[in-house]
Length: 554
Image (cartoon, rainbow, N blue to C red; front, side):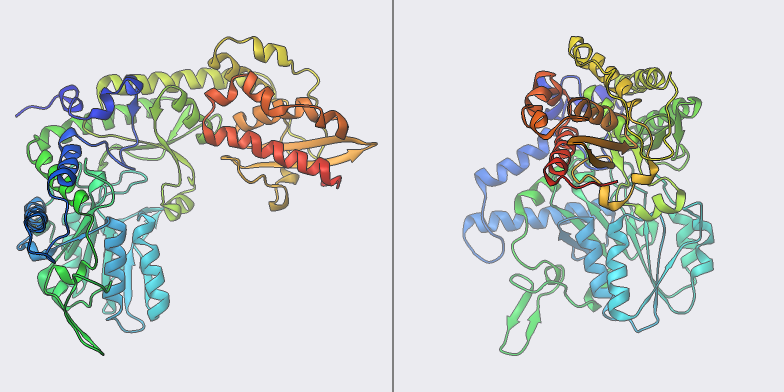
């Protein structure tokens, strides 16, 4: 078999839509797109066999039951489990990890220990924290260097009280892929339970839980071309048998008496209530879809793109790489040297390039490494060379605009002094015929807003801005003056636009203005994202409220 990203991409209807003709989708660590076969499987379920499973004997119920158990067997093969009883359907990896934390920790003794790492998704941290607090357990972390876990030092935190080790199979934040064979070797001498969070792993390599050697493995279908709202938990049959159920309700019981109930056998003991049956049908289709691909060739293609992007960004003085190309499952994490990560994300969005910005549900990793907000581009097999070229070109264009915006000297105020908006010409901003020109002009306007560290406190924080912004106000002789600060140049530029109209005005003069209409006439509401537009309106509401209150805030 051979692999062509272009041919592979044709199986995904989203990319064939007219509005997505130029889309470069690099947000695959959040969710992958769905092939037509998955969409059709879910549609087919609702058209031909929509009925609840197990509880009825009619034809549609039998067909639904057969489908669910067939998908269970396909999932067993997908991870190389010993028995279909070892496959529990759940809403995703998050629910599976919560199930494990609840069920396993309820059997532990105070002082027992759980080991996780700084690279974990919040879904593999918070449930253990909750259970540790409830049952007086101790939570330990794999030793790390600048936030990056050193898995070869795992043995340093293992002892006779260690009961559970729950580690990522691949970081969603920096793409780090631990050496699972090394972890298995380090854990072998100890009597404990090993959980692998495989949410990011399944799309990029074949899963063999026998080879990995873990006791539990969790996964979410939407990370590997399947539907959202469905995932699975693999667990060794003997362990699942010994665990108490998590949810109570229908399907998971054999008999209910007045004071107690007897639970169903595996796997149904852990599947209370009506399952997301159409999503299970879609999961089965995604497993079949992947089984028909050359997984080795797919992985080689993804790795080539991953190394290409790391090489280009590492060579650029305009970006600081957080992730590394080696042992990486397809994630490029970085920050721009000039401007904010959020500004860059919106620039890319205007080019129809989808990336993600934030802490990526990995705040501990961000905090310990000093990189709390990063840009994350994540690769899937349908990403093409043209996608990468378009992404790199957009980054280059962004840098040119940032260099233009910083060509002058930016003044840092030592105290809250008024900014001078008198030289900002609204007519010049309106004269640009395209968004790129107005964007550049707004970045130039941002230089008028000087840094004001003394106003950066919770009282002055403007709620509703995507990037943090602070706004203060004082009234002098009936006229209103404002001080603004933000790390985002675009927010400062939008703030300068707002303040150029109201700073130094009387209440009556401000009341006579139609600021939302001005925003629309400039076409900014059309070109800015909803969140960025909301930021403008949040600043406007805060300023108008301060004018109405008439209170001096400094």
